[in-house]
Length: 123
Ligand SMILES: [Zn+2]
Image 1 (cartoon, protein in one colour):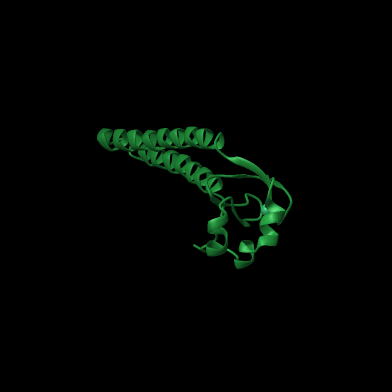
Image 2: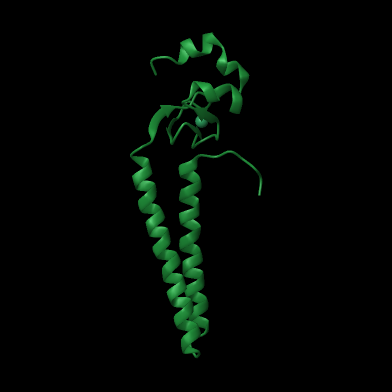
């Protein structure tokens, strides 16, 4: 897998998405074992646990979404949601930060310059 910086909410969302797939997959394997009662029951319960977990994760995303800050991405100019101090654009994966002290360190040295700070003030 490529090391690409992507939005936290997108990451969690795709995790929940694959969890549902995994759950359905495991339940399907359970159906193949319908002659072996304990095996089928085990796979079915496991599958339901995965689907249940994914529901919890989706609920968690809903909770997190209330804490996000909506901003306009400076790169693609689309509205995106930011979670925490540092996050990436949901559309173009442009790294974004709310914390001035982190800007130069994590991404780009020019963010520390006074001119840039002046421009971003009041947003
Ligand atoms: Zn963007």
